[in-house]
Image (cartoon, rainbow, N blue to C red; front, side, top):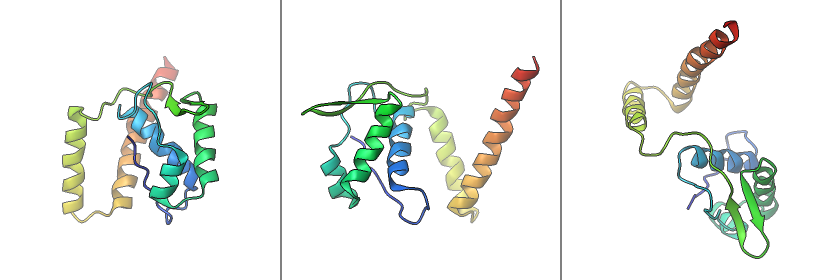
Length: 133
């Protein structure tokens, strides 16, 4: 089951963090169709956020067609995202790279910026190449 971690200093709305973390779990294969999300009450107890915030996040996920609420039963995953399983060899390589970056003295934000730049470089250029064809 997913455990949400809320970073109150991030500047990202709490409900958005819940949505993003759920989507990440879906992409990584940690949540699969049929899995039940934690009850709003459980999320509130674990994270000390307002119950309406959790419900707002779950409604957003439902609006996107990723989950469905079943009255009296809870909220269940309808479909997954992406194809990057948690046990992918690429994850191991990325973990090693992140450890080297940390050992080199890079801060989390530095690593995130560097990774985002590389993603933009590789994925945006691929999209541009396909557009030019």
